[in-house]
Image (tube, rainbow, N blue to C red; front, side):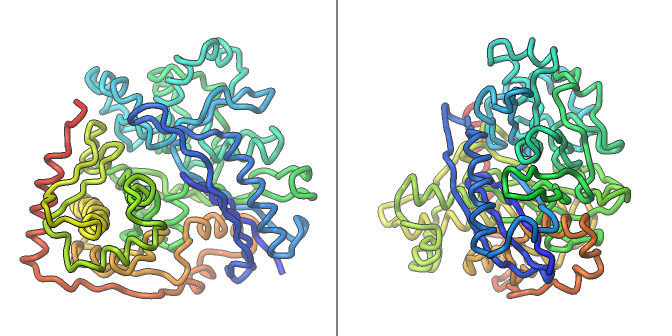
Length: 495
């Protein structure tokens, strides 16, 4: 029986999962790593710690599944997108901490580019916006702030890449320097129409092309993991950014299908097919996937910067829960939030606002407010942000959306999912396997290794529960009105 090894490198932890040919999980290993917050709005990771966590979890998953490297037909990699590593090409070591997708330090730099009139070019070529969220300004910042790095980059001595490129480089011991088209599409440096690095964009951000990896499809014979790591060589046959991976893992392969992942942030994507559509509501147009020599597929995307991270804040910041699951028990102690509203804009607001100056805002507190009210308001704040995304997506696509497929850790909360269905006025469909991010990379690897095709995968999909709207139109409108009022208060805080 062929097995597949999926690497799911996320924002707060790294996971490795061994799957069999039926898509069943045989073993899982996970390890959290350190979050670094040098200044307000800055977020960093130690890229070497990430690499070590990936290596450790892969070995542990293989051991627990009782399979050897020679039993693995292919590796699939999915990763946190936009997070950037710059490393020494020869030594294979980072020249400073990775700058994470949540990081807002380049906000002023992006404002200057916008004021200079560059956003129209950016939208046309990349489908994205001029926002610190994306990778290009982070690379530029590192080159400007690490002494001697611009000279080394010009001499071809540095590599820059998203986490997928970094992991493949380490897995192959430097033999392969590649990035897949979905991750490349999130850098502000790739033309999504051609699928290639763009000279105009590279010039705008002052980044030498020699620093960047070769762009490859998401599925195929992409690279070979060195035998040093696992005892035998393993083909790497799937690479895909985490949200596109979840879209494919949910098998949203037809235009108009929508998924939302509830992870550290919340990410909604709608499959468009082979033709990109430019958003009129400040959503993103991004590459959904590319399988082998087939045409690229595109998606509309909306991003919430702080989703599950707001629950982590209740645990680690306020310390009103001991673990993430307790938020549901606490929130269920009260019938509503008691007028409390939390806008979780801890690192700014994503789509459709794109306001890096917004900050987390807790409103409506009175003497009767309890931890339970705050917990419930936190869940409602997550659901309200996602509702904003779907509203914009329906307007852009001119498609009424009756069902949203969900995944990610926080979708395990029945309370949150019911809140979501109520606010969306749409059904929320939760699959039996909610770990669709890792599954999408596995599907890509399986297709690349010749184990599966898309029609076979469709037969493997199973739904665990469907949540249906259960509030009145009047109640929905009232909640939306209060939320919009709170968002207005949260915006332009650090202007």
